[in-house]
Image 1 (cartoon, helix red, strand yellow):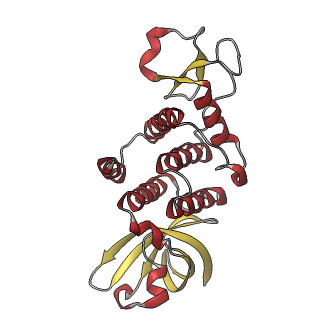
Image 2 (cartoon, one colour):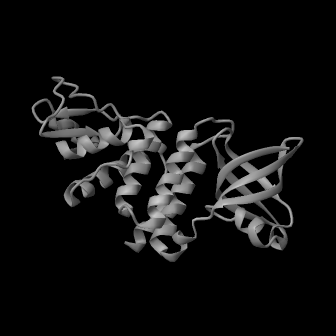
Length: 247
């Protein structure tokens, strides 16, 4: 028997009583676990296996399959269910993680990123657009798609007042070096947006959320983060489409 801590990213009913859950763990990436008699489980054990529950799971392995023996909740994030936009955004985070993270992938920072985003989202301590941008850009960096935001690829300037960021490869050119015939893959932004991107992808996890941006900067940062994530993941997400429909 193995004990792991993780957050439930998806539930799938099987027959009348059972279900499968996908759990994001620190040690083993996303794992699929069978929950026998799930609809008969009440109280703490039942809440431990619901969507977005952060719990401690005792798991049995039989052959190539994992079965839940018992579970204990650590934090259920009930507050997310008080707002349709909050639970929808959290569901988008979960769907992206299920797509990105493979079994046997060890990355505690990704689990920590998800838990921190849900904490701030549940408590309303950060704007939804802010959390969405932080999640998208930091996740891309943690999974091998960190943008190249050190300096202009043409002249090496570090802090251009205005620049053109390439959504497809993550680099940028200052206004003086940019060639307009390549405009389709680029987004025009200003230095405050670049500074925010740099903080998100480079700051240690303990300082990740410790910055503020203006409303205008946030709008541009949000557009950049979403375009960058969807371009590199090469797919769309139904949960994102639904979240957008609520705004």
